[in-house]
Length: 286
Image 1 (cartoon, rainbow, N blue to C red):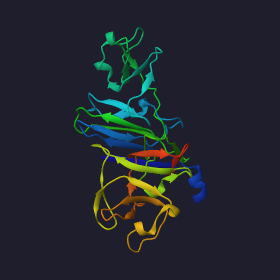
Image 2: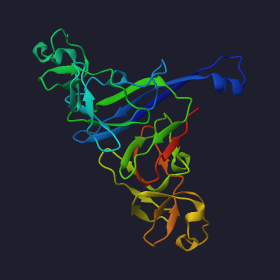
Image 3: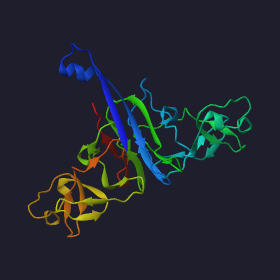
Image 4: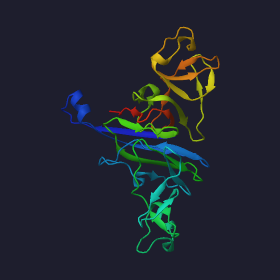
């Protein structure tokens, strides 16, 4: 379940071109969570004041309970964070409501408030609601319980395209960081993007079955091929080589899959096998 509302505040006297250029487009997105699994999400807005989202900008529903959050980075799902006391810890962010917090679990001088916390090595809960969510960055919500729980937030649509820098020899976890659906064709690789593949993340894992243009169903990863890299003998009858994202069919042929949709907030992993300094560009919704 995903609900999305967008509104544009535009001067009534502006022309169409001027309206688009001066639009202050804001919206609200709400993501339904699947219980007992990791839910892979990607934020779709900047905050209203133009800064990056923080954990404080994520709004859990009333029945969001016993759930934790972890970030996905290029090298995995565990990341070291610096606590307000200066300690560096590995951990998952936990959402605590004010009335759930024992004052004895807080560091000296802190008062209970609803938000996202990490446990320190001293056994204390540290408020981390100001932790930034990188643009295009993925995070995972572990919905341990809380049927029908959701999480979402309001923000401003980024007027600039987003460049997603890739780390070689690993999966780089990103997502469609816009509030609108795009397609694979909308992802623009840099010139040095080479020998790389893409897979989607769903609530239940990273492998998904896709329907080819010949109606075959296949599991696989999308591969980016430039026109001059394609052997015409690897294409199905009647197809011509064109730059884009492909899947191999069971018949050993390459099928162009540029029209595959990437929903708003959907996550994907890019395996950058080589190509130092390579990146993907996600177009702005404006």
